[in-house]
Length: 382
Image 1: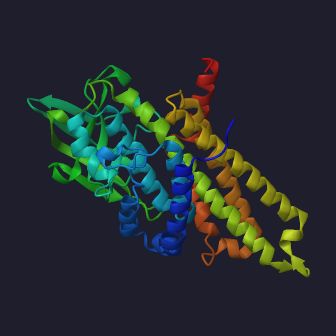
Image 2: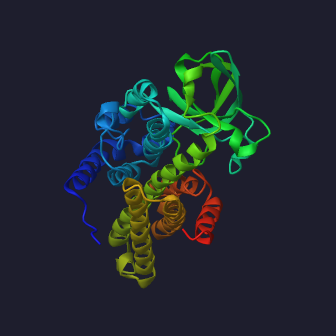
Image 3: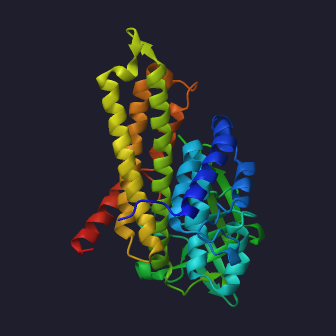
């Protein structure tokens, strides 16, 4: 068992850490305050090949592996969780399905712009009545000659306000449940009948737009179908598995920021004539944080390694996402406790970390659903 990173993986980690410390972290508080999309940072990440880390170079990506992706995303999310989720969605939820299921023509047309960082992609799955239960999806795609006519609304779409492209799930055959769902690649900039209805006001990840996408008799060309008709649900499951690895990495990054800031504060804050880091109560909090975050990172790297080696990773991805997000939520609460009154104020970033951490327990499948996925795999002997 070898825990050493390859030379390339270590290089990616170090490069992104330097960039995140210099270019992202100093701007994170202002981005959170203004709810501003970090356009310049995203452009720079694209130039570093971080928006298509595991996409082959011929399609505009970095040609690296998913372990490198996880290492990079941890460093980005440690500096700014909003930037982290923008990067995660473009890599995991948009580039992956287009790369895995797209035709050669679709890859050149729809994958290259997003993997290279020229444009951003999003993933249109969730609806008001179809979150954990995608079979209840109401968005429809009806064939009309050489076109598909799309009608429906998608909720809580990360990057939806800034994306140029979307992998969209829609029902192409009613009455057959999951088997009637298909996927499409949509050029949002050139699709009449599409509009962004609103942006959600959220608790955290405030520099990341969460949008409602509306399609009203929106027409797509016949070749917008991704894969075969009726295969959308299977594509969705595999796509979300990879997305969960991304969210686990985001959570680990937030947790790492919490630990570093809590430790630094504890070593400098004095009470009763000595630093609070000398008190056992504080030491135990820090010890628990460090141990659980190491475990979460190892689970996440394992899931990425399994994906890279084409081994089953559904259970590993669910475990990583569930555990990392739960651990980071606990760490952020304890981080605020260690900082006391300062932790509750916006003068320090700790309260932002807690607000950002919460969503990791919800998106890409709630942690309740993650436990069902894990249990299902256990029962099946996987």
